[in-house]
Length: 92
Image 1 (cartoon, helix red, strand yellow):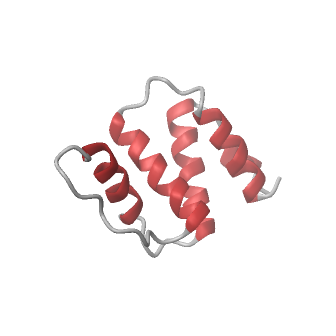
Image 2 (cartoon, one colour):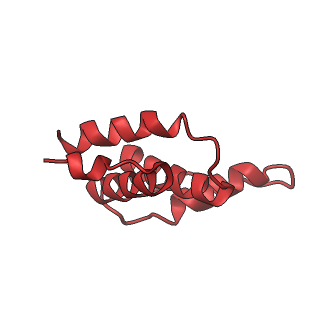
């Protein structure tokens, strides 16, 4: 399977994941956004009540400069680690 196909399968698997820590979820979010949209180009959310959005922005922005393909691989690696899957081995 192509990297894109495996990435999409891994993204579906994550939807079933309920036991991941917030830190792991944010790391996955950052890699997912980087893989789909590239570098974060939005302003950091402001305000006292936007902690969740700020954390998501920080997670995505921390992946700045990583290529789409590398972000997909890192995302798949993290899914494999959290779910006990071996998606990365499916990439041809």
